[in-house]
Amino acid sequence: MMDVSMLGYVLVGGIAVLTSWWCWWSTPGAKKICTREILEKKLGAQRTQQVRNGVLTAIQVADSTGWPLQTVEGPVQRLRTAGKAAELIEKVRAMKYDSGNAAHEALLERLWAALKPGVQRTARKTDEWGELGFQGKDPATDFRGNGLLGLANLVYFAEQHGELARRMMKEGGWAADKGMTWYLLAVTGINLTTTLNTMLKTGSLDRHFESAPVAEPLTSDPTEHPVVVIHSQLYSTILSNYHELWTKHKPSVMEFNSFMDVHVKPSVAPEKLEKLTS
Image (cartoon, rainbow, N blue to C red; front, side, top):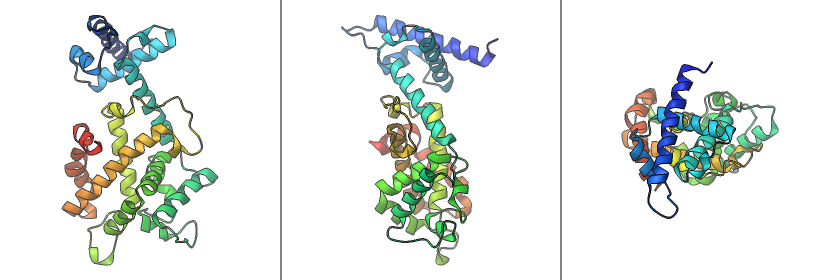
């Protein structure tokens, strides 16, 4: 028997899909392209998460049954792609960091090389990782919440924005004369991966992923996948924005959670993130 919540999603999705059909047939023009704006206006649902989930459920049903949903140009295909992109990101997040995996270790070494160029560590497990903003001698323990995605985001930021990343590490890192006014770059970055994933699940980032090449398979190096690159680009914007806000407000390290809630998260709300990335 179908779960009640799933039935609700299917019903909402059905309404959304039927509305998209009506939109398509009633839209003037040779191609009758039903744009996102037209569909949303006719749905009148303001893209709530329930409606988004309902539409995605209806799309999955259509894909599995051969229902010719693909004839509706525009919003359905974009939402289908964004949904698959979110699924791919979740797969990367669920990949646990494995110290015995040479590919995983190679990613970690790339992070060190980008943030500490020309500097050799004394050992694999060492307090020197603290200079990058990890909490202990083995950074693998800090990736437990976000898996390889947390590392992939950090590697992308460090390699693509190396000068900025090293400046952030220096300005924000611990020093005896800073008292409690500092932050851990790597740990902060991993927390921001969580923030970004929460936004992705609500559908507020769909616009950034609706044209992503989701069909490309994942490899042992997730940083190279186009969908992960898009995710990391958004992550880079949010992480650099964090440092700007931290520089302005100089919160205590003990105020991290409240600083995130009061300043950081509101500053990267969907409409504001659009301006940051434009």
